[in-house]
Length: 175
Image: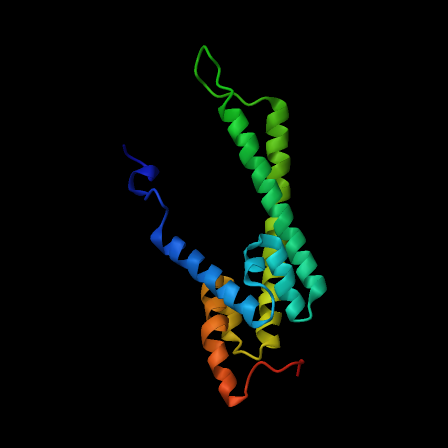
């Protein structure tokens, strides 16, 4: 077998699995450190809302959770529609045919998904900058958060906590 699927692992890329695990552990620790049960960090949209609430940005948290929810819902609809199209092969030719209605729905969900993706990225950038400012961390962490959220979360969960000894970070209010 040749092509894209030839060199893929059945479990996915080990680096993606590592970053996902690192992100989950870090999110759990950040939630526990802020007095929120860690399991709530595993709920996709609700976890974002709660984390935004801890930095006094509840409205931004609602917008981010809504954008991510719409993105996940439209992605799910796209997948269901794709699977239904794949199950409707023409018995005579074996070709897959998409009806006009399915094509219009597919396009509509794609447009909604694209718009939700753009809004999610915008709100995620705003959130990570405000989270970094609220925690009095170095501004370069916001850039890392945009590139690889798992690394930034692990920084806040494990490294940033150690800086509290000097009394430099984690003040109750904003400056």
